[in-house]
Length: 275
Image 1 (tube, rainbow, N blue to C red):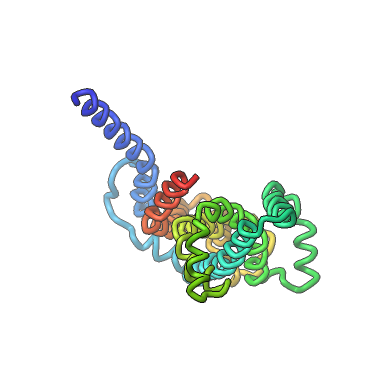
Image 2 (cartoon, rainbow, N blue to C red; image 1 turned 60 degrees about the vertical axis):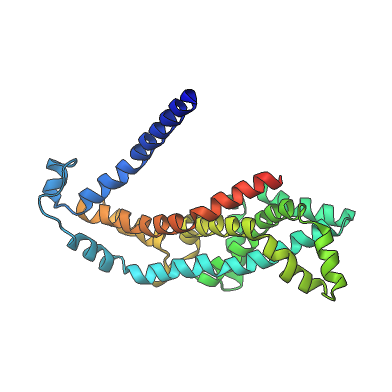
């Protein structure tokens, strides 16, 4: 018992220390973001002598934050329902229909995960330009759907294997057709992996910089990471503007992760048990 208590104390102490190490830079950036230019250089590790919250107001207006926030929300949330529906239904069919064609299709789909998007970006941009979808949020959304659906199929495929077929047979006896069985019986049982996929894809879409940089040219259509890159580049020597921009860019991610971190842990733990 004493050994277990000592081990627990050491473990908790290590966790607290690691937490402090990880959160300290964020706190330091926030403290300096509300200082004047002189205070940042003179006393970077001290609390501000005067709190300059107007720094955030200037950056908020300079970045046209709400417009860029709206663009990021559109490109993050719009692809998710399509990816979840297409990916879950395709994975379900590939698992339940045990034929060579299903196996070939599954391995063909997941093989696309091995191709970096940078390799196919030139022909992809050429194709988008030919149909008039460059400099368009819709074009970005379509690319996200096409590129992330195989990853979603891969995750759903492993999870659906552990869903008992007897439950589906009982539903069919009760008069459910194939769509009713999937959406009323199977899909609700996929909640752990679905929530995990939502969080992973949302973070990926929100933080994406490479695709918006290639696709978006108009200032009004920039996403938040792309606008922050422009603004930080222009304010490289103006620390009272640069630090608030970094905080405003990171804030939605912090909020999103703290709200949905439980779903990530639940999905990982349940997936490990099922695997």
